[in-house]
Length: 116
Image (cartoon, rainbow, N blue to C red; front, side, top):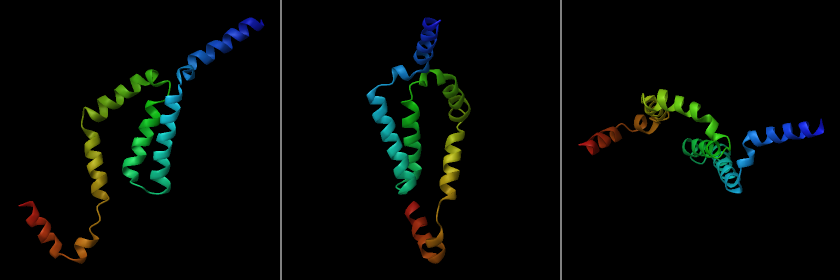
């Protein structure tokens, strides 16, 4: 009875994926957490640091091999169909500040001349 329980607990821990966790994974997860913290708390390039930190944690998670189907779906529907670049450019366009251009319209002519 106790031997079966011990084997069951051992099987559960071996199938969790935390057995494959190494100190390198933990360090990189901490680096990813630091990136997210710096991006949110101190607003240091949040558009860059938050996604990098999130993917750093996600990639170093020990059960990443079991998420292959999930990543395949994301790749097929968002990257192959080129929806992600559209969303990124829409988001960056929404963040554009036109205040200086409206305050000094001459800068519009300078910008147009720079494109020629």
